[in-house]
Image 1: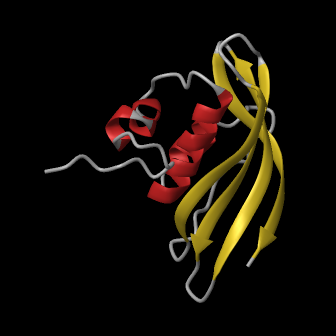
Image 2 (image 1 turned 90 degrees about the vertical axis):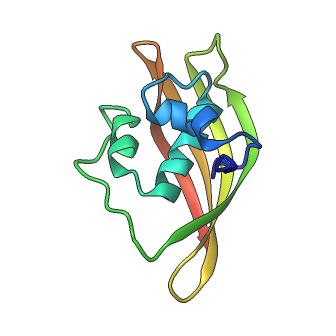
Length: 129
């Protein structure tokens, strides 16, 4: 049986990509954390989304819409967010289908390190669809 390709769009299998981060490994970069969060949306892992959110901006709960299917991720730009940085941004487009339509969520996300681990702070979004 072939390994399942990671939903985040890399050529790696899920277990070698976002699956490692979902299982507790630290994301090495802000982009890797953003990809793991997209994959959590795609796989319905609300607990991981909360875990990877900055404690000061984290909502009390995340409700995922079971009729929304995340279909493709495009990374548009990154600033900072590398191994030697403590802050970074990732701009991306996340494509989805909903029960009656399809659309695109575009976001400029901010990330920071807390206790040596990347976390999502917040983002500016726009939707089409």
